[in-house]
Amino acid sequence: MGTTFYRSWGYYEQLIEENNYRIRRVYLFPGKTIYEHKHGHRSENWTVVNGTAQITLDGVSKTYHIKDNIDIPNGVSHQISNIGDDVVVFVETAVGEILHGDDMISVPVSDVNETQLGYLPEPMIKLTPAFKDYLWGGTKLRDIYRKPCDYDIIAESWELSAHEAGQSIVASGKHKGQKFGDYLEAVGKDVLGWKCSPLQSFPLLIKFIDAKGNLSVQVHPDDDYALENENQYGKNEMWYVIDTEPGAGLYVGFNRDVSREEVEKRVKNNTIMEVLNFYPTKPGDVFFIPAGTVHAIGAGNLICEIQQSSNCTYRLYDYDRRDKFGNPRELHLQKALDVLNFNKYTVQKPETETTDEGSTLVRCKYFESTLYDVEDTVSIQLDNDRFYSVVCIKGKGTLQIGDMKMDIKSGESVFVPAQRDRMCISGNNSIIISTI
Image (cartoon, rainbow, N blue to C red; front, side, top):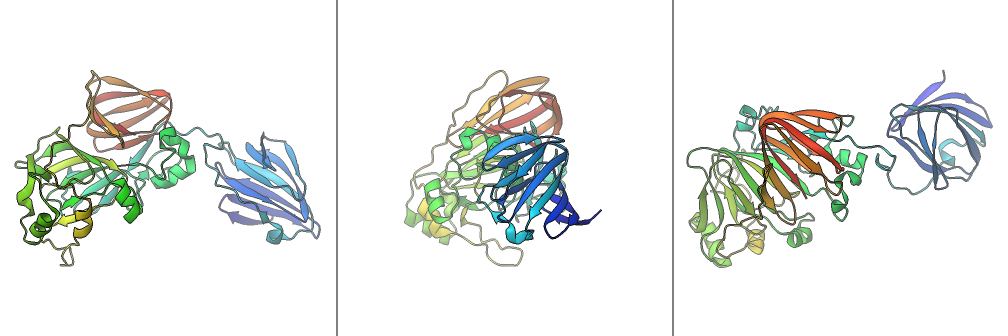
């Protein structure tokens, strides 16, 4: 056995090296690619001895198996990908002037994802969340949902997120341990369905919120303002109230028409709460919060929030609270005033629909969410034009797509790639399914 050299795609053993020829045994891991390149001073010959490979020569791709032999003349661009479940092993014989890396001529090429290599994505993957310990948070996400987090307080758990501010983690299957955004890059954008094809980034962020204290009074911009000023999308969101404590409620919108000048004055003299609507809450309440609407989640609410994938929040008022270092929390007054809707708030009645199987919570241009209260089995038709997020808010049960089964219990989240199939939900549980 010769010297072994390790690379990001696998490794190779240098078996023989002479002045004018060289023999290597190359190991290419499943799903990995040695990207397109060519040589100006040597030819190569590859013999596949294990696995299944897709080899591209000057733009023409073919599949090769054990005992297949491929000649690669100098000047011919070539690329090899492992498209099977086993390690691809091939013996490479190079003849000519062996100049090592100096004779490696790269060819511009995009990354190859698993979909392009012919892999079928797993029908569903379980996710674990990213956690936030904002000062207003409590302990319900650990006490009720058994979230594995060492923070003293858990304000939010980001159940479905590819946002750079906090990504969920793949918790099942061959991509276990990867950040959700890295998983999407590895499997390819096709898993999101063609409805996501115009979008630059993953469009949804779904979280649990435990408000032991009041959240700040805040507002989110729309897409136009956020893209121009923050280089990210705006934020429309929906709240589903899971549980409440006595006296809990939500602040949403102004209770009368106001002006920019009045709002700015009230923020400075601590009277802004006087012109906000307060809505007492109970489990099962639904609120849709369009961009531009002033709002604050009040103390005592446990909420599931479905929103655009954005962390763009302008804090208008924060009760003169201090952070853990004793400093006043930052306000974003001028930006908040730029995007606020100053008109009297009218409760947003999202388009809803109730069937024997589920109740639509919200349907807007950015997302739609449906609640399923399952007592035995519910069967849902999946389409290949969109992905699905499954979040269990109560009980436990089993998801099944094709031959794949997955247990799910309260507080857990599952991502379902775009596919044309049926998903069966069994058990005794309440589940919110969201898509675009």
